[in-house]
Length: 553
Image (cartoon, rainbow, N blue to C red; front, side, top):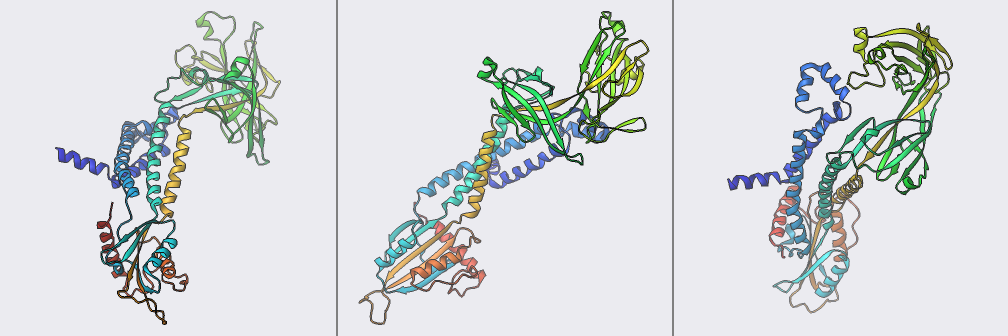
């Protein structure tokens, strides 16, 4: 049992498993982008299930409409977290050891390395070592004296490659944690506010039209601030395409709430208001027709209700509802309720008697209304849409159409009981979203570190360089013909075969051996190497084994 658990842990914490889990996480997120999600639009999810029959029901049972809250997505997320922790902990320990370790000793046979040179020098061993140290400035160096009297230098460079690799993986781990914390403590709320000085305060969930809290948010301790929408400006191109939207706000937060100080802010689509750690976005806008109803007893009621957009030209539909004043009997009230439903066009374009909209801006407003009278179902105990009436009341005959007419601002119609309905005009409304995510700065920071770490690990090359200086036995000093006093052996090894190390090695070798600098050319193993590429590869692999076995700590 112990062996099984140990092998399972080793498998889970391997880098291969982490990569597989990362791929599975990306694959598991696809349904969240392709299918409607219940947390965003429950009505659209129900419509999708009805339209796709048994297939829609199966996806529902498999939690494909709540992907990010599903058991299987959470399991992949948690396993990836555990796998990354298990992978990175031993790698961090090994990396710390490598930082303290000395460069590996010089291999006995440098000719077996993929990059190697041999030459003579008229300088002494001390002079050759001094020249090598100057040339390898910035490298991690270790000078040693060997048993046969030769002296060698081991040099390493490119430790930032592994640093970048670790930063990348730890940033990914931090990103996962930050996203999880954000999902626990974030919230998003949407609200429609009339652009006539109406006010919205972030004081509780009741102030929103829709509200999505995080797992640890109950809506009782929201950041306090208030917003007033004084005006809304929309500009369109001649083609009807939107150019820009701007809502002129005033807001107050913190000490301003006590002093009742309002601060102006021009809210635009890509320019959210940031206040008290929250962000206020402008998501949409629309029109709200104003109707005044004069009842048979002379009492008047005026109401402005937002209607929703149904096409790009801002043709809108909705329902403005009225209760008869002075009627206290519930049964009688349910027979006299009114609903003004239909279409609104900011720029009327009639096709016969059918109303359409020719432009999204407010140029020639008009409404085509159906007036319904009867029981609206407001007292049924069920939630009602502000944009429509209860269709079941129409089907049962408890709500009937009593008038249909097209109206422009200032025009009116009269019902059979003497009720007068006047279309007074239209106002603008804006659709705001308040978002709170305490982990967003951490998400951004880890994302930046992730990119920097990946870039560093791809750009920096890990490589090693060795110099061995062997004095010629019985050397009387350089003769008139410039005879050699020291044999210089050079070797180089890159940690990856595609590191592009050959050109750098040739420049080092030419400088240390006093040869002319080589011209830039293709990266080869050695200027004087006669082995073919397959032999170089075999020798390089053998050399890496020798170097690994010879590491000194």
